[in-house]
Length: 239
Image (tube, rainbow, N blue to C red; front, side, top):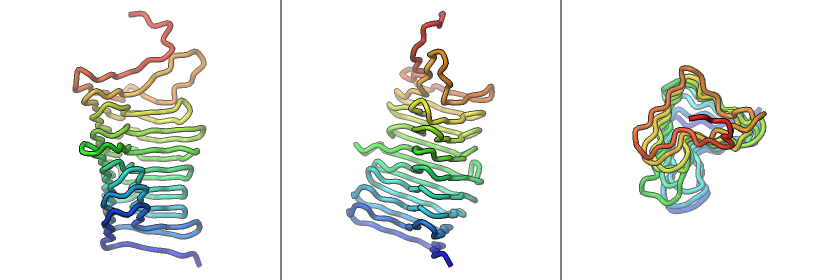
C-alpha cells in the first residue's frame, strides 16, 4: 500500500538550519496531523507540512519561522478540518500552493496569523499559483507587517475566501492578484490598518475583475493612510 505518516503529538525542530521540514509527504503517500508542529530558528526555506501527496489536518497547530518558508507547502491535496491554527513569523507564508488543491471545512476555526513586525523578511497568509484551487471560506486571517494578505497568480488559480475575515496591518496589499489569479471575497470582511491597500482594480474595457466582491463584502479602513481601491486605467470615472 501507499506510505503514510501521522503526527498526533508534537514535532519540534529548532536550530538555525535551512530547509527543515516538520512532516513531508511525497507523491502517492498520505499524511495526517492533529498535533503540534513547530519549525523554529533562523534558517530559511522551511516547511511545517510539505505535501506532494494527500494530507489531512484535523485540528492542531503549525508554527514556522524564517524567510521563504511556509506553514503548509502544497502541490498535492490537503484537507483541513477542526480547529486549526497556522502561525508564521520572520517571513513565513501560512499556506503556499503551486497547483494542487486545499479544502478547508473548518470555517472560522481555521486561523492564519502572520506577524513580521520584527523581521525584514516578509510573508503572506496565503500564496497560490500554478492553477492551485484553494477553498478557505470563512477563514480568520490576521497579517501584521507582512508582504500581503492573500495573493493569487496565474491562469486557473483560485482562492475562495468568501465570508472570511482578513485583517491586514502594514504597507502592502491585503489582497493581490496578478490579473489572472482569482480571489472570491463574497461576503468577506477586510479590515485595513497602517498604510495598506485593499487591492488594485483594473477598469480597462474587457478586463474581467479577478477579485470578486458582492453586496455583503465589507471593507473597513481604520487608518487615514489606507487606500481601499488602487484604480488602474480609470478613464471614465467621474467624481
